[in-house]
Image (cartoon, rainbow, N blue to C red; front, top):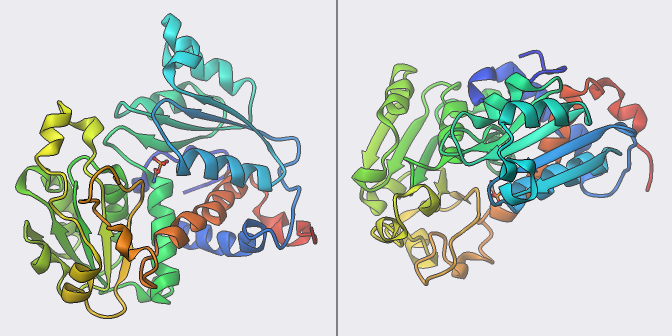
Length: 329
Ligand code: CP
């Protein structure tokens, strides 16, 4: 894709070459993410960070990434603090805000709503999650994490084996990651979920049509066997008709240290887009794994900063100035 001035709404826009461009740019910005270097690349630029659904990581990391590039961040969270509460449309909201800022990040609970923001906006819109639809920047940082954890360059990804576990029906991050992985060759996907929460059949057919091996199972032990990475996900209770509906599945695929060590081969990378649901002892990734060296979830969240900085640099067209702009703090 042409990054400069473009919206990023879906992983379907991205080629392997685009992903490589994002990763090369992210690597240049790693010292800034770690606070070892500073840059004023986006001085004078303004980001609107518009979150109409709860978020910790995505909102804060986009804001931090833009700030570390020298830009300013304007935030709004929740419908009640915008004029949506007075009946304003997405079209009007987006037209107005795009007159105030240089780029927007939008999260919205409704599938397709972020695309509507983009259609009305005069500035690039980045999808921060649209209902059960897509979470393309999470998928990029997940793939960046896999590349670092497995010690593989993108051209060495062909043939990897990964288990996607949990709510594969409503989880947008896991579906976006599956779409990005489908760009490689000969991936083995273990799709581990109860039948009612399996990955949508259209996406499974897409993975198979791309030549990948797909094993669908509701048995956790079978699904964990022989993979190099496990991507665990939360039951997305906010997308269920009622909390009681979601309760039926809570704890179904809880991985603790004993399960991990019994069923996964040594060196398996353990990932999760977060948040983990810690309200019961059946959290999908148990806290007894917190100090396990293969638990990559906090390295994964850290990787959100360089990847999101890279996307801003590319969309704003300043990527060629990165190296020259780096200064000591
Ligand atoms: N992974 C993710 O999207 O987390 P938040 O909902 O906290 O942004």
